[in-house]
Image 1 (cartoon, rainbow, N blue to C red):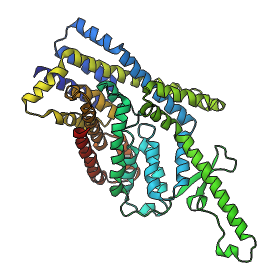
Image 2 (image 1 turned 45 degrees about the horizontal axis):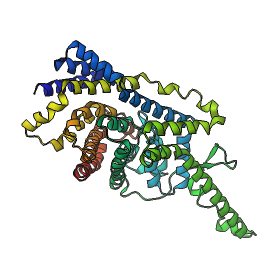
Image 3 (image 1 turned 90 degrees about the horizontal axis):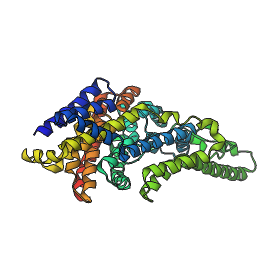
Image 4 (image 1 turned 30 degrees about the horizontal axis):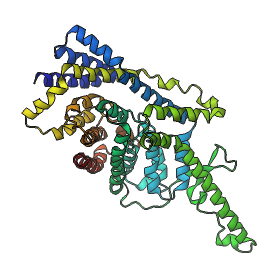
Length: 451
């Protein structure tokens, strides 16, 4: 009972400090020391626990992973790879529904605060000439929902890596299992996003210019890749129409190949990281380092663009978060909180299988930030993860519970920015979100018993 009260108070302290705009890392450090003192740890034990937690190999490795991911993200941004992905997709796909969902999904490949605001104008453009007639709430839902489909799976997102480090489950296994939720999220959004919306081409896309270089030119999708055969009027009185048509078809085929090459070139670094981790079972540290070095070496001619790419990676907030997380985890272990919680909840008659939902969900709802959910709640649910393969199912339940809380959080920046951009009624956006979020949660509960 005493350990439970101390843990709850430390958790409440974190939330209060976050609400008062205290950095999450510092908030967790303060909560960690509060937990240690409240649990009766003496000064010497507090210092020893703090030093061993902060200087452990696990802490240093986690910091290195996050730095490498930030470096990779920055290099990709400076080389314009994300812009390449987005522009080429708009030129390749004729169905505006696919484009409207794919553009925020492509932006979601690389995490950034408020990234949904970046993709919102693209969704508006992809809606086409009659896009203003679409309900603003539906456009807001499409942008917000598909912007976040990768956050369950990709190691580019710190929460995925943090989950692996805290639970000590292999990152590759976590990504494979979480991939099921990403697939369900893609499908679950379709009836709420696209029912009643036809497939007509979207507004504009970009295709490579005749030089085949990085420069691109804006073209109408109705003209860019569907063919430029002469109209009936053009045909009248002209010779060689068949030859011109063949030339147009050959040109369209060439343009398609260039655009596809542009798209694959933009997405290749992300695919490479995922493949090295999932297929070849490499550590994320090594996988990110290999792709980062390869990307730099193959783009030395663009050094002026990528020079200084390392500055963004040395973010103080990143390091304070890592230190705060590992310190909090260390204090929980030293205080014996983790060992005491199962017995306490059992005495209340609360089944252990539901706790991986009950603890992370409100944290996500209150913080609106997935790394905070994992950092705060996952050390507390460790005692409720069964040994063996069953641990993956409970980890999945906890992660999805936390992230669905994040999706519904009124403090989630992407939700607020998206609603504001489309002038959408926030309550109506919430109504669109509830059912697909419920589908994700039901899927996670089902998988937690079957994995």
